[in-house]
Image 1 (tube, rainbow, N blue to C red):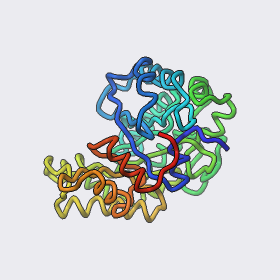
Image 2: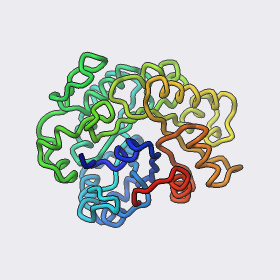
Image 3: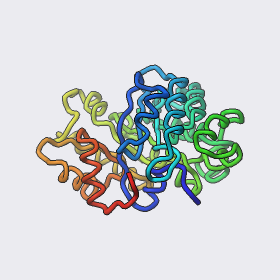
Image 4: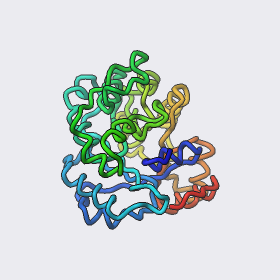
Length: 300
C-alpha cells in the first residue's frame, strides 16, 4: 500500500523524522506552494497559543497539494498541528473537540495534545480523531470514535483519495497498521509527570514528547529550557521517555546543547536518547547529519 503520510512510511522503516515549524501568520496558499519542497519530513504548526485559523490552514494545505507531489512521491509533506485545548482535564478536551474536527478536515496528518495530565483527556482526544466505524482498540482502552461524516470532503482532496478511502485511512497509526494519522501527546509539567505512564499508554497514541520550556516554568525556573539540564529537568525527560518505552510508542525530543556540534547532537538524539522524531535549532543541518547517520535513502 502506498503511503499518504511520509512520516508513517519512514517511521515504519525505522528511520527518524525531522520537523520544521510554520508560523501561523505565514499560513496561505502561496506559502504552501513555496514551502512544498521543504527539507523537513513534516511541518509543525502551533495553535496552542495563537489563533486557530482553519481557513488559512486549508489554503496552506491546498498550496502544498497543488505544488506536489513531493520528491519522495507523497502528495504533500506531513503536516501536524497542536490544538488549542490542553490535556489537563477530560472536560477540556471533550468540550473543545470541535477544534480536532475542524483541523483534521483541512487535510492535516496529525495532531498534538499539550499539557497532558489526565489519561481520560488523552482517551477523548484519540476518540475525537477517529471515525466511529474504526473498531481497533474499542473496548480495550478506547470508546467509539466521535468524528462525524461531512468533514472528510476537503481532507480527501488534499490526500488525493476518494471519500471512502479517506475515512478508512484517516485513523491513528500504528494502532491501525493502515492508518495515516499521527497522534502526539506532550507531558510537559510536574503534574503530568505523576500520570505519564497512564497518559502515554492510551491506545492510538503514536508518540510522546516532553516540553522543556513548560517543564522549567512548572519547576519554577523559566531559564531551564536547553541542555545541559539540572537534575530535576534530567529526571523529568527521562521519566517521560521511560513512559513511552513502557507503552511501546515513539519518542520526540529536541536537544540544543551548545557544547555539541550538529553531528554530535544528531548522534545523542538518535543513539543515546532514542528519539525517532527530532528537531533542533540547527534545523536542516541536523536533519542532514541525522539522515547520514541512519543511512536514509528516501529523497528529501
